[in-house]
Length: 192
Image 1 (cartoon, rainbow, N blue to C red):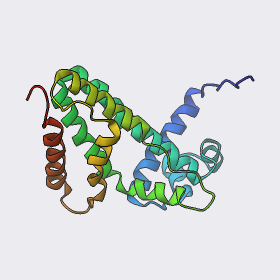
Image 2 (image 1 turned 180 degrees about the vertical axis):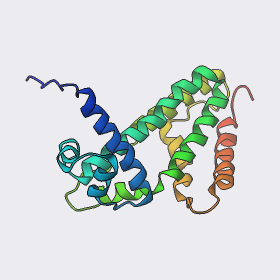
Image 3 (image 1 turned 30 degrees about the horizontal axis):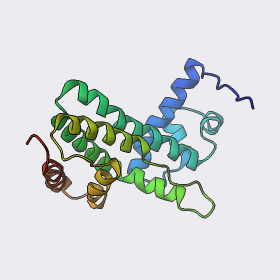
């Protein structure tokens, strides 16, 4: 079975796509059902260009989700290069909380796109779980967290972040929640 190779986009086509994504992230974060025509207009592209890149709302929203989740995930390796494992993990957790709160409108757009009968499935948070796994293993090797904590355990422990309301002053509550998670990870660590 032969696979069709993806042809790289021309530089102007790539710029158009990136501009559409940038505007769409902003617009859909503010208003989950923002009209696609308004996104195209603000991005400075015609309807044809817009729909060539994103044939429907679901395609656009899922592309944004993948892009944004990958951005959060990619910071894990960078943080481990710059900081000791415990600080890298906590800094990454704070960035994840920031992402969760500033992109709450985007989460609504994802729910709208994936909630319709016969619509696409909600995308997996695999990149973020993989990043959590990387950080957890680095901390386990450093002896700074209890052994055997899986990325699934970690994701369940921080799930309270998605219960916070971005309209309230969420930062102090998120910090307390994440402090509790970190304290739990440290309990039973070989090196306190």
